[in-house]
Image 1 (cartoon, rainbow, N blue to C red):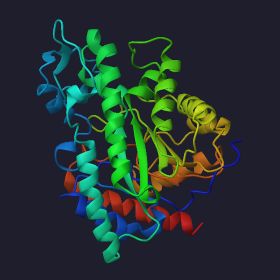
Image 2: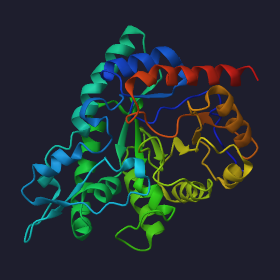
Image 3: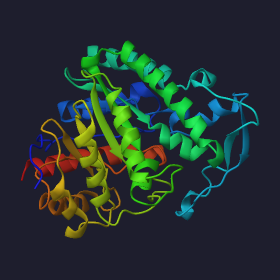
Image 4: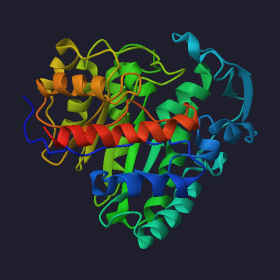
Length: 354
């Protein structure tokens, strides 16, 4: 059984995208609805960021070093076929460095949203002690999605350097005691579980090395967390995890190697999995004393009843955890968001009464 787990019961986590009107709407709604049961609030990744990392296509299109080519995509989930159809590669003879990308948009958006967060905290909509969370896709995600196979090695090195520069900008603009950084790990998690083929070997070691490096770049006083993800195209995962074993293995590898504290880990749970077989691997989790676990088992397909079944199954194998959905809300209709937020409140109420 995992030891040293920080009690996260009665707490909720939102992993990033919430398609309301703007950051002010998202931060205000989450702050007012959840108070300190929500330890950190994202800005919702609204506007051009609603579809997660695909706004980076605009960055690549502006770069003279890159050219657009027909994408080589693996659509295991047929509902995802309309997502994207092109990738980019280095032009013949071109070289690339961090400065080649210009502004990626992560720092600019975060700094603007931090101003909204401060104003809402001053108004009382956000409780003291609740942090501002910035969710960043790992560079591996962006390269796997947007860069053609033959250019990935060269582009990844430069792109990661540029992402870390924007991370430094965010950490310079937001007081460390107010900031949480979440690394979003979708393609990474899927590759770690054997569902994607990376451009390096060994695959698992390469994934861990990259995520450890990203974590170690987050300043010590800033919160650090990871969102392990199997995708959310068309309301379905890219592939469905057969159980929590790969997520447990990756989490334990990160816990063993990162040179700083890790405040939270988030793991998705498919809606249909309320069986012991899915959760049993969680008994091998070796979380650090400060690390909270959030399980993405809140689903509006079966509401409070189904969520409580999944919670009951998980509790047979893991000491304590907070609740979340399996991914962000960016690809769902905006009109469905209020009811989904309310579902979190109902689940928290039911679990508090038990």
